[in-house]
Length: 328
Image 1 (cartoon, rainbow, N blue to C red):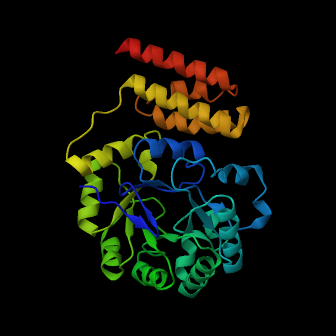
Image 2 (image 1 turned 45 degrees about the vertical axis):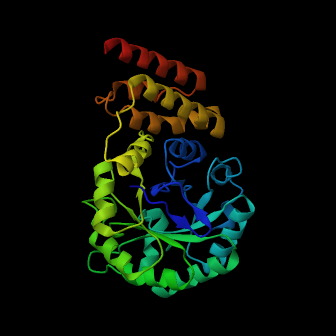
């Protein structure tokens, strides 16, 4: 059974959500994930620094207006006033939900005291949440980790601060800041958080299969699951997870020809969103993810990575799949 989740006034179609991932969850990727069943797809994080809002990268990240589903935009920073301004700016550009990033473990984010580095400073966490919630009329959500290191798992404290100051839903990655993406995610802290707050809790971390999604929901009592890296090169995972949660049955994996069609659509979308050369470069990592199983030696990928012409990329992929289909 799939339980629908409510975020403020918005009722999601299901409880399987696409995580925000910098450099990955752009407009093209979000649209694919939604089409394959994600109840919500959160944008990649936007800096709260107004000096970068007019950069080409930021303007691409602010492509919200034509989205087919709810527009949830994640913002990152450490200054409460700047975060409030960023929230207002994104709402003016079409955001329907603002998500505050206190979960990113990347060094370049943390050295600016943003992302999961903020978990060390509960007072500042409270100030940021209060400033953002006061600044906008749309729902505000928060993404955190379980704490900043194994000895300092303060996720329950942060969750209570969030709830007390107007956060309407909380996503929790089952690792600490210090863990980065190493080891395995743990779900005991997420379960403890769920037992201590009444707002919806979204469990995140190492949810790579339909069975794992079912296990995490049952173990933690969470209201929803959030899938990140497992969707890279596999946006249909949302369809598979939703179907399994609804029926207890597995969907067949997509055929090689369906994977080809999805990948070609994705690459075309990147060319359209970013322009020919930047789009071709961004497409490389996605192609690598899609073909990880078929191109385990990386031979095709090394050839593909040298191509910067949009049509040549599409033609090369078409020929690759023709050969793949002929061999099966």
